[in-house]
Length: 118
Image (cartoon, rainbow, N blue to C red; front, side, top):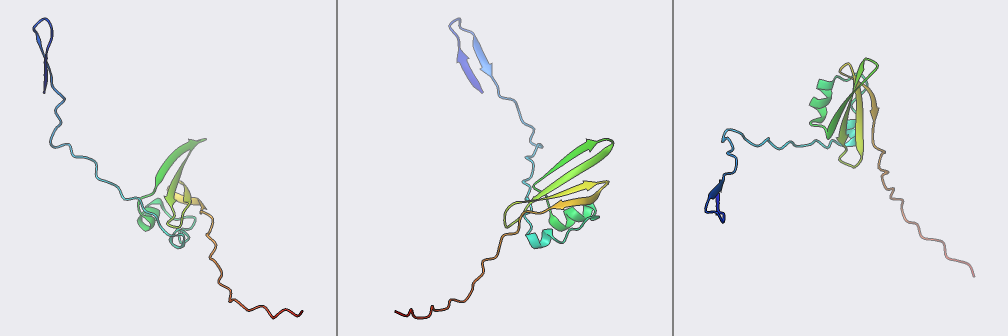
């Protein structure tokens, strides 16, 4: 509570709003970051329920309607970097866009160059 006195002698009391004790903060959500190997296991026709069960909580979801068809895009962050987008209609995966594969460095054996002839 804040109290102040004005020049006229009146007292103004400001009271901050009371918060209900039963109002708890929303629990933190852990966003899933599956590996590319796990992302590649999802195929067209996978149900939304199975997608979420296999990959966990997505990074974000968008729902759009176009000409009477509802499309949903579910995006995951891949553990190796980049986003994987799963486009669904009627509760099933219709298309998949995976992030580019990260090239694996090749370790070729080092060979000594033949001695130069002078």
